[in-house]
Image (cartoon, helix red, strand yellow):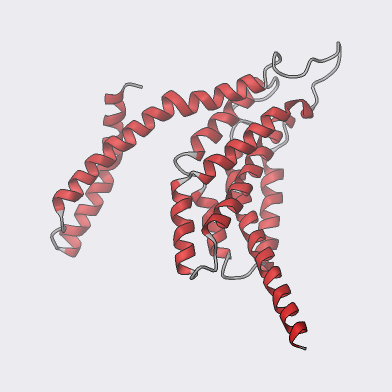
Length: 258
């Protein structure tokens, strides 16, 4: 898609947002916007920034994600089959490894997760370690994407995995420290943002297109849903482990005092 077409489409997307903000400011609040020039320059920067980002997605992330899935699942790359033998799910181990590593690395670099983790560390007074929070989210994301690729390889229905993950989320919600639950659910949402989603979508669609008998529509989508759920599980698991270690320290300290 040419750059000017993306600029026009992005402008149409931004205009309603600008109209609502300026409309409320001048018609409801009835006050002038402070530093109006800076605000307008900021909108222009958003316009060009989003346009270049979308162009980059079309020319780099989407093609590379699909290409990696196609190459890793091609018959030329997979182990050689004996005559008459059927392909086993373990033959796609490079696909699972790529899914895990790309899921973890893109999540660690996700700007929205970095912002949330830093704010969580500030508000908690240092109780929540921003780096450990990001690692917990990245681990959940990586596991969710890997499970999603395995589901595509096996051809299993998505609702089995979503239902199982939700049951586990509910159980952990009942047993986790109450202070971590809202942050855990937010952590699942911030992972599916600018960097992660395009690569996940391209990987799922490319894998479903490359494996015989799989439909890109039926099997290629759904990885983002799993990617949202498993960070919730790992963050609450991290909180449960931290709470257990704290209780253990308190018990040890009490025994020493006796």
